[in-house]
Length: 175
Ligand SMILES: [Zn+2]
Image (cartoon, rainbow, N blue to C red; front, side, top):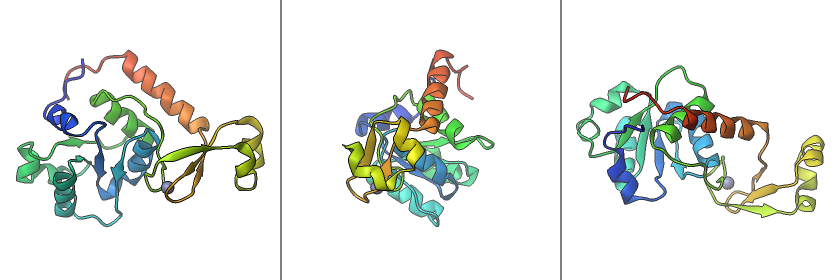
């Protein structure tokens, strides 16, 4: 069963939940956006800035820094936060977060800026996508905010598979 302390009250606040990643978790931030979750990330964000942002915007704070969990309002659960274990790949971090909070994969958002994506016809991306990708994929998306082009390649399928596997095996209690 998914045993998660503190987090559910926040999920009720914002649906779907939104996240704030610490400076070390830029890769996770990109993958959370790809999984459809609005996620903020800044390379030079300080602990307090991150805590205040989470509080102000109702974001779940994600961090691998044990120090931040000693800050009173984080420790006391006023700011919902999830500790990301060390030594995981970006994909494993994503599976960890979605698994712990029992969240589905949603419509992908832009990995670069978190903006919403719109499907665009293949002809429109011909000049902007590697020829091999163009040859074997049919669906392409453009960020409405920053105009990046995306497609669901092999990385994406690996994540989806990992996530399904993670869901098939219930986590063993709270660790
Ligand atoms: Zn974008």
